[in-house]
Amino acid sequence: MCPTGEFDSRVLLVALGILLSSLPRAHGASCEPVRIPMCKSMPWNMTKMPNHLHHSTQANAILAIEQFEGLLAIDCSKDLLFFLCAMYAPICTIDFQHEPIKPCKSVCERARTGCEPILLKYGHTWPDTLACEELPVYDRGVCISPEAIITVDQGTESMPDFPMDSNNGNCGGAASEHCKCKPMKASQKTYIKNNYNYVIRAKVKEVKVKCHDVTAAVEVKEILKSSLVNIPKDTVTLYANSGCMCPQLVVNEEYIIMGYEDKERTRLLFVEGSLAEKWRDRLVRKIKRWDQKLRRPRKSKAPVAQTSNKNENSRQMPS
Image (tube, rainbow, N blue to C red; front, top):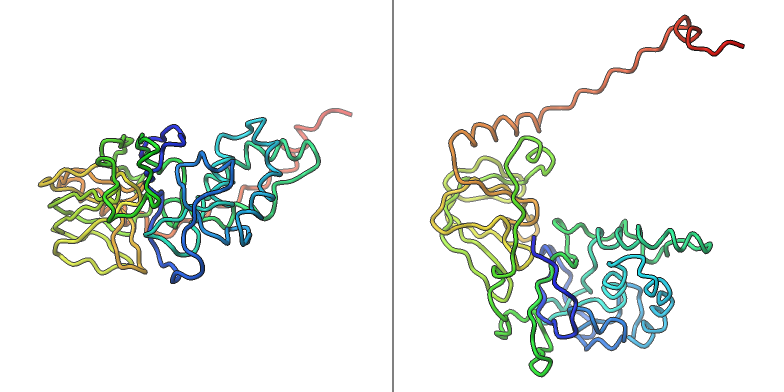
């Protein structure tokens, strides 16, 4: 996963932590500069109204977000400001002028875990309007999180209005320079836990980085598993959901690749939790065994036998 950069007022290039899925057509107003004072330090400078709290203007949002100044002052969660700004001044880019992009569920949960005890202490609860349950999960939905932000230190004089316009050339260097991928080995536990949509044997033909949008063209040699998208034995594209492709793929190497599918856009996704290991025939045999185990119905546990009255009596304290 990409490292988190220091939030800086000069930081404007943002690699969104999003997985593209079906989005409604754009409507309403377009992007506008962020004018909420406490959100001007966020790594985006454009927003869209109405926001997730249905404030039609930033002036209304400013009045509403001020109620959290006390919690922010005591620093109960390092994610609170990011989460609040993603709700009250949601990020808007020229490429995604749709419904406002939501913060990820994990960001909300971290903020709530840190700050709700303080609210309870003073007789308040976490606001229902900021409920975490309906927010998207990072690797399966459209959302933004600090973990998926790549920062590029720039002078304020050259600030682009739309930091994620993939055609404006304001990229600030290759995303791979910022990526530090956590090593993850293929194992039965990981395979069953992640429940991948597809598993293919493929040779990497090309890896493209365009303004922090990363894709890989791979030639499919063998299809070990697919579920939502028809995968041809041909060159297909894998899509990352941030400015990093983890684990990193090397051109001309052959891998066993495990990942997820976007049915709405009929795309193969190579996102957080995906796996790629250099092809070995032995690994293919293992994966087939793991998949059989994954598909096998789980046996229900037998009920615990009732303890006999005799044993219960023997454990009773004397009267």
